[in-house]
Amino acid sequence: MARMHGTKERLIDAAMHLMWADGYGAVSVDRICKAAGVNKGSFYHFFPSKEALTLATIDAIWELAESGFYMPAFDPSLHPLERINRFAELTHTYHHRRSTSDWKAEQGCPFGNVGAEVGSNDHAIRERVRAVYDAEARYFKNALTEAVAMAAIPAQDVADSASRLVALHTGLMMHAKVYNDSGWIHNFLPAAANIIRARFDGRRLAVSEARA
Amino acid sequence: MARMHGTKERLIDAAMHLMWADGYGAVSVDRICKAAGVNKGSFYHFFPSKEALTLATIDAIWELAESGFYMPAFDPSLHPLERINRFAELTHTYHHRRSTSDWKAEQGCPFGNVGAEVGSNDHAIRERVRAVYDAEARYFKNALTEAVAMAAIPAQDVADSASRLVALHTGLMMHAKVYNDSGWIHNFLPAAANIIRARFDGRRLAVSEARA
DNA sequence: TCTTTTTTTGACCAATCGGTCAAGTCAAGA
DNA sequence: TCTTGACTTGACCGATTGGTCAAAAAAAGA
Image 1 (spheres, each protein chain N blue to C red):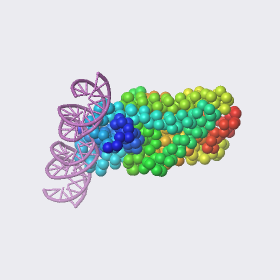
Image 2: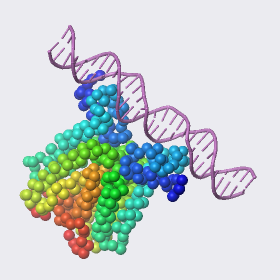
Image 3: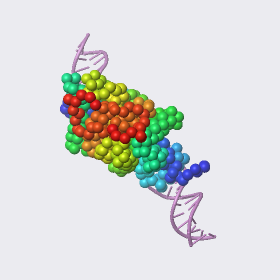
Image 4: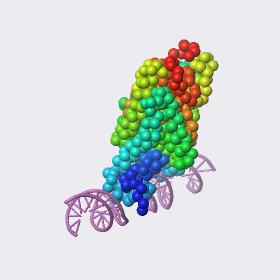
């Protein structure tokens, strides 16, 4: 049998595709092994448990996301707001392409999926997903900090804004999955734009005011 | 054995708690039956499958959410923006209370959880979650329509804005789950406020502009 | 070459999975 | 009183679950 990569890499690759598509619980170790062309014993030679393979898989997907979206979009040589434009374009294009070709359907956010599924049951996995969200927010925060410094957007708590953008993006990807329509991701940029304009930062909408 | 409600209701109630906490795949029919004090045979007398029970459970949770959050918050006698204030308060208070008492941890959005887990594998469940999201968006859309009519917020595509608010709220609840911190939900109102101010609705941020 | 370590093989395990079923209980209607 | 049909019981099913293991094969130093 041709071995394109090592056994370990093939297992991670198979898990990546299967778990992203069907989730953690719905994918068995047997199925992953079969897809990777690996025997069960070899699996447990490289990974002590299904959970460990899942952690490695989360890392692998994040590496793909970082090199595919975050690094090219948040290029320091670009205007900070243009970086957000690029991010919105890249992620939407990717989901649109995949959901209409490779995938049978829109699969949403791989981190959000596993986070929502095993979030409160598996400590290690939850921490790993959290680390990914932290890393995502860091990219946004840096861009927003620069944008504030050059007065492209108003002064604001950039950490809060960055977190809100990540949560918004995650929520939109989940909607895209539930509606099986990657078009939902198109809502990211307009909503994000208004969030970072930050005209309002209180805890209550004032009902008396009239116009914006 | 004391029967507070019918067997069917007890099964739905048990499934509600267990699935909200641990997810669809992680909760077995046996466990639900044990928690409800019901035999397996009785389960399959009332429900043809685990999937059917899940559908009924989604409906039951939505009834709770609607009567607990949406109906009281989106009271037509309130100013439309005040309704959004109330919604933000009610949902945050609820999650904060539950995650620090009844629950062992913040559990996120029950619909988002099941939607993310079985979204692309189970047609019927995905449709049901979609229906819930539609219903949620309808409440927001109605309030926004009124707010625009009374010039409390600028004219805008209220359907789009409503969808964005629902996705934002979902995403924040997922973050709350992953970070095990219901405080994330506090980000809803400020972010939502800026979204419905709708100063921007294009597909790209203009990098040349200076101040907001 | 010989030894040591890494990797692979595939049978095997107890436990659990969703679901079935024949037998029985029970209250209400005739 | 007899019948009917909704409901309950708990044993049972084959399939699958995550995980183990002893032995063989392959690869890597020496």
